[in-house]
Image 1: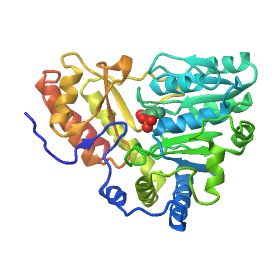
Image 2: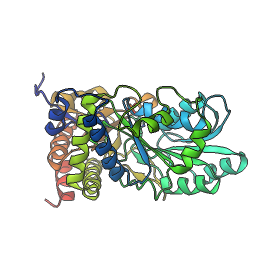
Image 3: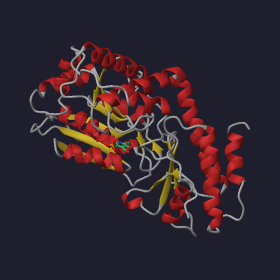
Image 4: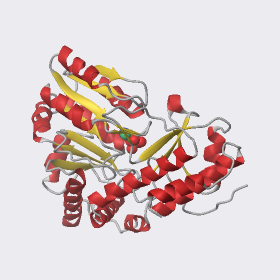
Length: 388
Ligand SMILES: Cc1ncc(COP(=O)(O)O)c(C=O)c1O
């Protein structure tokens, strides 16, 4: 039986996320000329606000494509086509592996890989950079969404700098919800996706490019992905345009989403994300469930998505299906983690009310299947973290 028939489910996926009505309203604005002054002003304002969210003085471009489009823009522009450029790709989850797969199409990959959810061994990264000569770039996923883990961007950034390699950081699910001081971390190319911590619908991504990265990219003139040619984006931006037709309604939504972030204040927003994830962790631990990632001194639990092992006595379908019947959408594990973990995201404009609702629902579903004896412990643990 369906218990919930709401038009707006509480979407706690690690993207797409629940979109606030203010942003939904912005999506329905009338179309404007994408080659006119109005669009130029809109795009420039978005970029200024993105610089605030990225904490960078570097150039930023908005691409009409999802996060993977920005991943390919970063890798393809830095490595170029047909140069045989060397790249160290670090992976401890699905998206680190995706960066490797993209890099394989452009350059020569030196993979540094770990079991999904295990910490990155910095010594292994150092060894790879030491042994290989002339590594052009290092790729890392900051917040590895597939396993709910925050990877050590600062330490990898330092290593990349030491070995004179560019640092490409996938911040798709960290920027806007976790402190990502792009310039201080020495990130040459940082990328974000719209449907994650920015709280927007899917369809846009943004890329920041450092001076150091430009020097390399400019050498690859004409030997980069056509649609994601960052030099073309740079030329167009001078006129307040994108090289090809932008996804206009999403640009209106982006401005609204970024204004919401500015109003909340980046620092407050990061604190809110952190406290929401802490509440989820406190709740699941109080229910004697296990968090999935294994941490070392350099890695952290994600502030934006919590990965939990599916306990004995309940299947993935029963767990997530039960939540869905109550109008709450959470994520399962991906690929090899399918049926093994579930993930509750706290990205975007998620509030304490949403967390308490989701935890209460989770307890109900677990109790129904006999995984826990009684309900209330999880909500109480979450409530306490909010000081209530
Ligand atoms: C860390 C990370 N990188 C890349 C992607 C891919 O983004 P998209 O699905 O928007 O193409 C995702 C999507 O979940 C992600 O979480």
